Length: 55
Image (cartoon, rainbow, N blue to C red; front, side, top):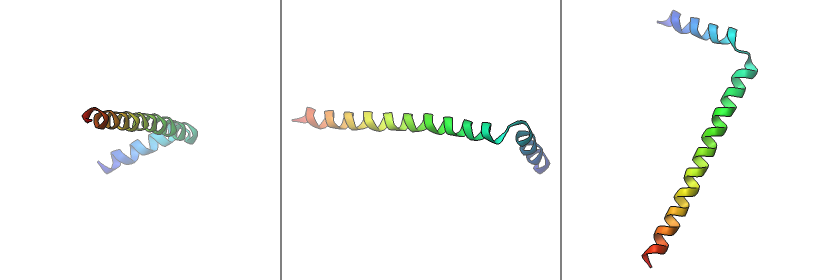
């Protein structure tokens, strides 16, 4: 199993340049950040409307 992990890491390093790897990580983190920000905004809006609806 350890040989397989080393082989897989070596394969990924050999086939992808560092720019592609960093670019992929940045794109993924950007998308996750946008989703989290939207969830927080909708949660705040929902909480405000829930407290206003009680009065």
